[in-house]
Image (cartoon, rainbow, N blue to C red; front, side, top):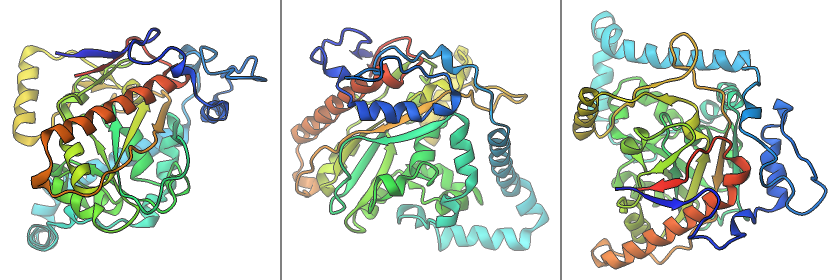
Length: 382
């Protein structure tokens, strides 16, 4: 059963007026993210919090022509992913067996733990113009609240919502398209994804070159132990949340997911709430039949992931809609001293998890009127 955590206009859980406390400088940052559309209104921008509320409408964003170079960037990305899958299934095993099978042996016996040991990021891969072109398509903007993060601390970034593909998380934290190093100097972050993705030959090499690692407890602990400034980003909602990624809504799977809070207590890492406004707007989700739902649940049970029935635009429907995504990184929740996992109580986990949920809801309420252009209902958490 789900619960409505934050309503759109009258939030019982947040004091009245708190949701509009976004600094005017931040508002200007928000609007600058979409300045190229030439449709954003900033009436009465001369004073106070002008521009925070309903001066920007979702409808006004719809007319912007799709950048042709960004469209081709998506085609290149999909071509690379499809080619790697084709090589894994057909070309490698049957056309180039003398190269493919030694590679598979190397992956299985020598390199298999790399996804849990911080990967092997290659800076030129993270700096490719391809990622900047894709980010400009939506566009995607990354914003940090507050001061620079303390380089001496460790961090667990938690991204919401999952969406269909998590474009906001990928572009913000796996690439340098949105200038993550400039916004978070000294923070050595790894985006985490399902271990299954590293079982696909060639595709795993692309993920590892971007510093993407496995979303396992071992992987998190190993990377956070690499030194001050170490950080990971988890898309906490996972497969269950991706099935609820309907445009204009934010239905999070979070209430009973507390593993990240326990790891934070174990490692002494700060928890960082991150919200991707617009993440759910880039694809439409089709209602699945009862048979399809049963297939999705079966896949999720055995493979830990599933794929919603989605479609975007273009001939294949794989090109996402051109809807803005605004990724807001909240201020860290202060860490506690690292603890032995055996001595961590359920009450401590519950308390930290509750504090995190309050911080996430506060973050949502501060920004929803400014950057959530397509809202049709309240934030919901289940």
